[in-house]
Image (cartoon, rainbow, N blue to C red; front, side, top):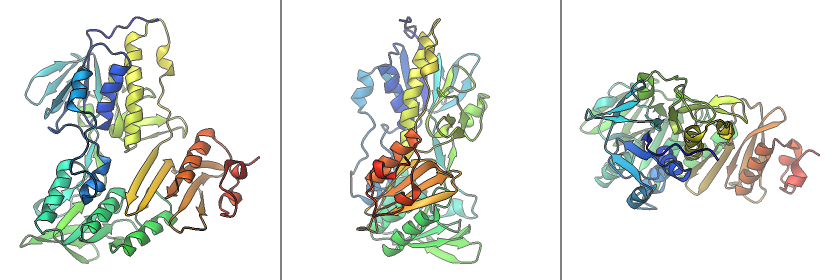
Length: 428
C-alpha cells in the first residue's frame, strides 16, 4: 500500500459551485489528509443551480435554493470555505495564488472550478436598458422576481431560444407575464437537437401562449420612460418591461490564461482532469476534456459533468500525491456518457449522449400519448444519443445501448407496435 503523503499539503480550489464543492468533499473522502481551501467570489453559501430557471423562478418550489452542503458539513469535513473572495492571479513558479485583498495563498495542488458567466451580446443600448438581466445566479433570479413583484413583468422579451431561454419563458408564463422569445437561428435549439424536437418545443410554447420568433437578430435596445424596445435587424420592434438575456455563456478562463495554461475552447485537461501544469487541475464547465466513448474533446455545461469530473479529479489528485513506484494514476480516467435534462411546463426532456455528427434520426412515438416520444440519433449504424420526452424508459434503454455499443434495428425501433424491450430492438 503506497504511503499517504498528503499530510501537511495544501489543496486550493477556486470556485465553489457544483464542481468545486463536490471535488472538495470527494478529495477528503479519497483520503487527502492535508488542508483543503475552497474560494468563491460569491458571498452566498453554495447552492443548487438547476432550479434557478425552473421552480425557483416560477415560485412553485422552494422559496430558498437548497445549499449543496450545509455550513456545518464543511466544518465537519475540515474544508475551509472562504466566500466573497476573488482569486486574481496564479504564480506557478512559487505555487501561490493571489487574492483580491493582496494576500497570497500557497498551494501544493490547485484546482480550477471557475465555471462560466452569461454572454452579454454587444447590442447597442444594452448597457442602459432598464430591468435587463441574465439568468445564471440566484441574484439574477431574485432581480427578475423583484421586477415582476413591482409590476414590471407584464411584457417580457427573452433574447435567446436555448434551453435556459425556454425554461425561463415557461416559468415566467406561469407567473402571468406576456412572454416573447427572440431566437437568432431559423429554429430554436438548432445547435443541440434535431428539427423534430425543435418543432415540438416550438409548438409546446405556442400552445401555452409564448410567442417565439426565429431568425431574429437583436441589433439595439431603445429605452424611454423605463420601457424598453428591442429592435431587430429586420426592423421589427418588440416592447418589453423586462428583458432576459439567454445567449449562452463565456468560459471563465482568464485566470488559467494568465497562468499560461493550455487553452482550447476552455481549459484543456487530460483524462484525469489535469491541466498542462502537473500541479493544476480543472473541472466542470470551464474544461475542454477528452471523451473516450466518442473519441473527441468536448466542453460540457451540465451538473452531471461537473460532479462526475470532480470525483475523478479527486481520485487523480490523491493518486498523484501517494503514488511512488506504482502506476496508480493510470486507472484514474474520466469516461462518462454525458446526460442532461430540461423541464418546461409539464414536459420533462431527458437527454443522453452527444449527437454531434449524426446523419440519421429515428423517432419513436408512443401510440397512446402524443407528448411521449423519443428521438434516436445515429451515425450510420452507431447510436450516438437519445432525446426522450416524458419517456424515462427510452432514456434508460438509450443509455444502456450507448454504453454497450449495441446495434439497434432501426425499423423496429421506429415501429410503436413493436414492444419496447431490448430483446425486440437489438440486431441479433
